[in-house]
Image (cartoon, rainbow, N blue to C red; front, top):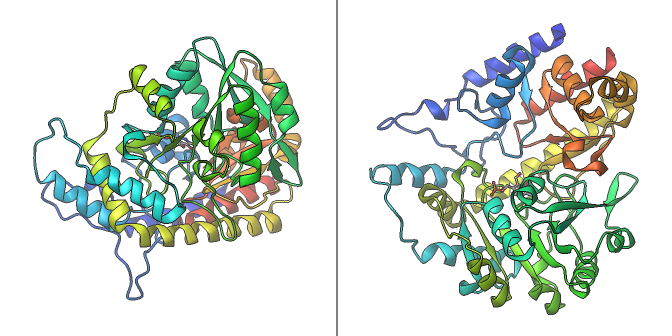
Length: 444
Ligand SMILES: Cc1ncc(COP(=O)(O)O)c(C=O)c1O
């Protein structure tokens, strides 16, 4: 790693000493919560040290690549910030009671989910068509088991969130990739291409809205056309809206379940959680709903377990009851991080291009020219074993910039030439990562 990184890392570590490590707080010790200043603003600027808490974003990368190679982890999709204080307070209160036996879910929990979705997005969720789970993945897996027989195909518009491939494999099905159209840095649905990928073997389509990794917030028009095609061809729509609360300025999340065409809505199931919006991923709590009672009955018939996690439920309830102001502020901070990254890249990284995302805190970077410059294709071919050029670009940034970002090829064949960078961190950490990357590219 170059000297610039050593210097930057020292600055970074100095910044981290200023804050308490949440993992160090034991029973009976006061838990520092994210305070606001006099103007009611949360502090997202001070870096919050997560190292030593067994987190994937930092600790896993340090374990994989060594501390000397990881100045910043910017891969997996969670946030580096302290959660909303209401969440920490609710969790601290609950752990005072030292028994963790089976839970009889309070009715207030589904009521909060229903209210949040109605109040913010005009979604009508019927209580008897809302199923709980330990996250979006278990919910999607239950739906796949119900609607996609083993060996059948699950259609996805790619590049798309890599976790779906795992769900599809776990259900014994095959992924069918229909590439999105890319023009001037913006992705669009390609309906002709999509129709070509539908056959008698295609039973479900997974739609991601907002779309991970490209950040698209799909329009009502696009989703209606998509829904009509799927419904006509007997394909059930599994709509993952986990990123719904995270939208950048001037953009809008349109819930699939609010589309005017109710026939296509009845042919869909929506998957959600508070985990992306409030950074509660390890709390393992999610839900799904459908307007169609037959779909819910079928998912239950195929053995969906309505398990969930006590602390996950406590955290989600606190988030929905008293976390909205924190969410509003974090969404604005993330919007500014997108702007910061876009202008920094434009000014300092001529080999990379980035079109600001409409939603999510993920930046989908075009690194085609980086791959060419470092000879990533040739290196990948020499390495073999299915290693992709994007994995080589990932290695380049780890070794030369101390920054871990995800290879675009993880998101399907259409992810070639791209990398996914998570911007949900303090501006200082983002600046460090981008500066290191720019310096590494300049000296290549
Ligand atoms: C689109 C999408 N769906 C699902 C998940 C994971 O959901 P969960 O942790 O609730 O299983 C992620 C995590 O990054 C995601 O981006």
